[in-house]
Length: 125
Image (cartoon, rainbow, N blue to C red; front, side, top):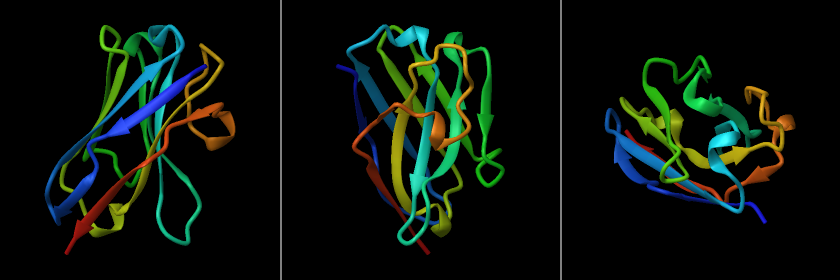
């Protein structure tokens, strides 16, 4: 059974930083792509960032490009989302996600087979 557990959310001021972590169990972590999504109150869940297997390719939503960095540590079965220059409109529940397809680059929630429980990020102005 594949399980994803996020950590690292919290309350931060406008312009601050946070690092989210997501640890995966139940599969060979290094063989699969990983992604981050977020959902603000009253809005749809949206793509934030993704990383391919072997760390070969990374992609970001336009709203976070240049401020957020996704990375993975296959030895620790963990994917990270470093979030810098946070803004109030980054406030959301952030979800770690993955797919059964080893070779796809995640860009949409439609590709996701497994979700974490979510971690709240709140940015105050």
